[in-house]
Length: 370
Image (cartoon, rainbow, N blue to C red):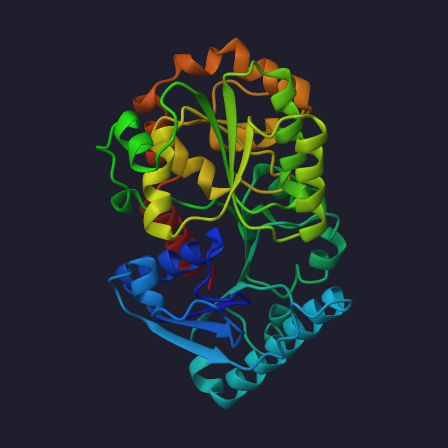
């Protein structure tokens, strides 16, 4: 059986969703599905072969189709976003109609907001993966009767969808999975710190992810002023929201925290896999989804300090009660998280969040629901 994975994403990308999309396609192939990934044609500074960039050994078809890419042009950022998404959606529709018989017999898996509206009119076996939903439940409600199933990332989203009348059998709650085979778990923390020239005497805290307002990076930086001077926060990620990133740097400078909050660039994918062993605690206050970086860090014994909802979805034993800078610092200083060692955190990921377990669950779900 064929599965079309439709994702409105720049591929390859340095962002975490890129590797997740590619790994899911690879895993679906290993489950016996014929996979074709459909992505938009976008301007891309990364010229490397996509399979080589992500270290994907299993090949599958990738179809790049037209989208009008005006992203990056000043003063029309929001408009450009909608233009690109809509032109991609109509291009997907046109491509599907040219291959109507093939699409009609296949499973359509969307990681996109607009194309499901168009294609669900013509095809039945449609599944939509939803990450950040914000206040757009009414938007998705219009699709409830048209989509075969929804793949949600958090229990919070599942509860909201159930309240809006979605049948439970049409919902699969499945947070992003981690490919356990791709991580080297043998390097000591001291060796990892030496490799990247990091101080052995500092108590290091990591944030890994781009600088988005909704991920609460400002709260992380502000929490540093409530920590002793031997604590250091390392922020890895690109300045996606430039104004917000500038605001963070002003906050750090005005608080005289320059020596305790370090803004670093994103690392290439192979280096990211070696990054986490330098740390014992990670802070990430993403409000709507579980960042995969938290799960990856747990494989190396990094305890994620995150929102109460995220903690429950991950399966963490202890968590914050409120998402404010002072409580973040207090939670770190209390040190109760130190009671949970590498093996404990690894087992949570292996049992609840491994990519193989996720794909097995999703494969059964979409085949049963088609």
